Image (cartoon, rainbow, N blue to C red):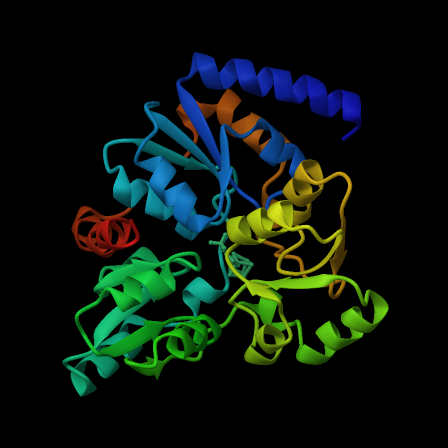
Length: 309
Ligand code: 13P
Ligand code: SF4
């Protein structure tokens, strides 16, 4: 899409969302032109929280399915639409209800701590949800000593390292995008850009985190680089964050670690699809979850919002 077409579409989107009482929430990993037309852009925690504060009756979510599901669970009476209903998170499907049940049976005293990158079905079996920005704080606040952390093993190890007073049961889930980055990739990037600070998402493997100067959620990475005095940063997370990083910091330089740090599902969200959903909202499929599942799955999310305060 040319710059001019993109601008025309953005203007139409603005008019449509007002006319149809829609708020657009977007994650930092979607394309820059989608972030630009969103009413709010954030990390998973900020988006979940924001979804509870908006006044519009319709939420159009630009991100992957679990993010839209969280918005729906926290706002059962609002209508939630996805820019692309097929945009899903690989990690969310790396654990099954049977696997959770088995560990619960074997460890009846363990709290099930569920990363938001999970299905509503798995959330419904969990005690509390966490995101990358609040996982340490939330788990620290849990009364249980034993923690079954699902589905991401890298985030689980990151939290476990920060909380030696707890014992952890791990699952083998991972994000293919972050898992792709290795410690050696970081060392090579540092050799190429010796003055640059390394900022990494906690979904990265341990050997990447060991080489990093800062570990945080997408929002935290953006804030760190924006507030930092250094001019150059190596960014170990999905490339969508570069849009906000560069917008906020035109005088700084940001480097990818590898070419492949791209979430193909996040990239399914396009300006054309946002426009199409808005234009044909009345005929679009809403994100719907079974009532019984909603009732159970919203509890760990609500608990997260309380514990993360
Ligand atoms: P954040 O909550 O840090 O934005 O991360 C979401 C995500 O999907 C990371 O891969
Ligand atoms: Fe899921 Fe990884 Fe994409 Fe994040 S980057 S949405 S964890 S697949």
